[in-house]
Length: 449
Image: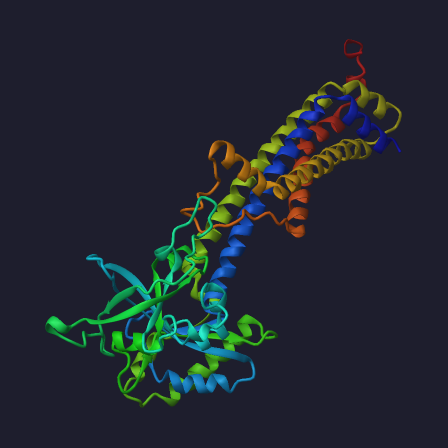
């Protein structure tokens, strides 16, 4: 019983132990808040990338694309693990709005709206035509005009709360889009003054993917129209990628491996075709592999953040070490009395380790509770700070961030609490071992009583 009573008395009577308690609580509070926000941002960013490309991508970074995709689409649609397939063309071009004398560079995507809405969250990214994505490229009610979908940050502005100022009606704005058509060999298809293909499109809707790079620089066109602009609409049509969505019960890697096997067989089958050499640059990737260039940067920031908080944990270890060293140096008489009545070194070590455990569990509990309360109100706090002082953690007119993530994952919280307790035990080991080595005769000398 004394193994529990003595640590509890130390915790209440020795005010210096409050320093260790506060250090642990503060450390846990900071880690819970920052890790929750950072993990929430990374998870949200990954989900947006997943929603943008589907589950699997068969594609190439080459601007000339690859041929015979229609045959492979038929192969995929016959598979029981494939839900839908969407052919995509990607290229770069220039855009000029009616009434403007300036051209600016853009990334152009060509899609079939009906297919794309089955593979990705394309429908949810629209505003005016989300109820009927098949009308996404139809300006107003005029089927004779060809529409385009513009990245929302290219078209609309945001207020300080990150809310877009949508128009109540769609302006019939002309947009002239120019692309350089390329041959399958990568050479310019045309020469001279007419080397550029230019076509006029009409604004129909905005694309709000939540991905800053997409929303600020991408314009979507009907697949066939972009194939014409890029020179991919020859007798053998070409595309850049196939976006694939698997059935719900199919694991990502399993589906990717099956598609890769089908692709290898398809390449062998088409080996004697005229444009088979274009297959050399085609890869089969999961959405994570395809978007790794963008995701890796945020994951690296998250890893660096974890490393930094590892250093904060070392600070906690040092604080606990100092506190225990001071407590034990002032409690040598208690240690001598305990050892003189038969308390073994092992039991003495247990007493102080239980004391360290109490500090760790109570400090982490208080820190977690404060962190949870802060996260529950974090968006309200930011709104209040913005209303009073104009302060925002992220400027919503610049960053594609809505509410600050505040959902605490239970497994992450457990890891933080366990780490805090371990840090306390590590900080207490050396002073506790020194206490166990004290001899009763030395600790009960007259000059120490």
